[in-house]
Image (cartoon, rainbow, N blue to C red; front, side, top):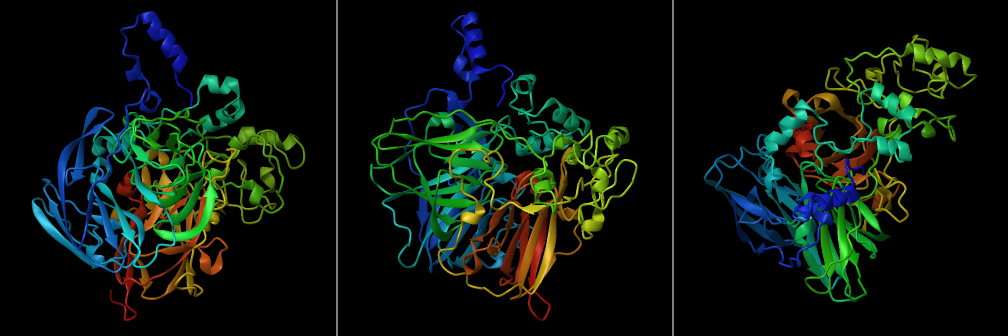
Length: 635
């Protein structure tokens, strides 16, 4: 990450100004000297009758007050601890002056208790109480949050742990719940408005002259190419550390929230990403993590050094610290704009070294759905000047005539272009600025290189044309075997989806009877987000399924940003080659320019929400209703 003024310059400047300067206030919280540490556990509620009271409050983050919405006076909300097989009655009191709700994320509940206003129930009116009542049909790590407006961003979220009815296959001596989140002193409405006016408002990760001269970023040529397309390759996240402090269990990095252990113990960490907009990369330097559960479902243990966790995902990990010393738990924001930080230690008041933020990632051709290495006849092909092909980021209404540049490629030799290092005339379905089609790469999407529009609606006929669809990925590939943006070149083992295998066989192993494609669409310059080019408010019909049918769903990401996609009321099995031991999840990150395939059984009759779990993407329209209807045709 390049600072306009780096830390050494800041220290020198402060010294020159004389020692009264409050230097610490200028450093990020994770880089400041830490407090003695907080070891207070999350408050816990349990039993068959539980009361939860939603109200506005003030929370303290790194010693500073911030406005919040909490439950029972805490952020995060209390840990709800239940047991598989029990019934629970949850009396939710709304003390707000506005409607509210609670969605039980990942829990299989009757649709009327799923907690999504406008889909499954009207919402909880101000100064009123709503009773949720349902049986507990599963075990594992889950969470709950508001589905009303943007209350979740203000702190309306909390963890759920459900103990199995029988013996837990995961053995541990101690456990800690780790709730990762993002919090801002700005109101959610102000954040949303700022991104609608300027989608790059919070992006302070842009490339600098220092990065160019040092060779850490793109080449000058590639940077100029991206500039011509009005695209910032450092645009990885919409809302960043410029807006957020990243929290562990409601505490900032300076607070040094501490989880205790005794050396030699097997410690279970139940990690929940309850943030609104932040994908985290989680690691504990000096400790390996054994992943034993994903989205509440047990998986065959897999040992890693780091894992990426999307918004709304959960992972359980076992660590076994043998030494009598402290370890730092790092939750690094995917765009490297900040980190959540806590400590794992044998005693309170201890701290370990906090690593520096790593180099922030840049988007690539693969993130545009332009995976040339995966195309027939292109294995091993070098793609110099790949930025010339980059289609994402440009407003489809903004024409850029680059025909003259492409025309110079005619004299560059067979198969190469002076402008891009590729023979554009040899690509089937593509046309050069002059409009001459080629025949070299069957199946490639049509791309008008003259204007850099890449919206081949013929390849995605269900996508509605309009300004809300910036691009259609021409060559999306399955990236479930990749570690995630920014983790491609780390020198240790990173969890990938294909590492996950269900501990027990899947309950339904029938082959799908049909397959559907759903495109994740958007326009970055206008902060417009949708499914198949249609935002929630414009959708005329739900996505319909018949009770009991087995369906294959292909999620195709036509944008250059990862999206954690969540379906309510169901689990799905990722199609990653593990047969009847495919991992079962309720949320999956669909990487930029990629596709993810999952099978599911539509076994819960009713209307259910289906959406991107990036809060502001959902609010902007990337949400639909899924309707599971009885075989007679009525839900």
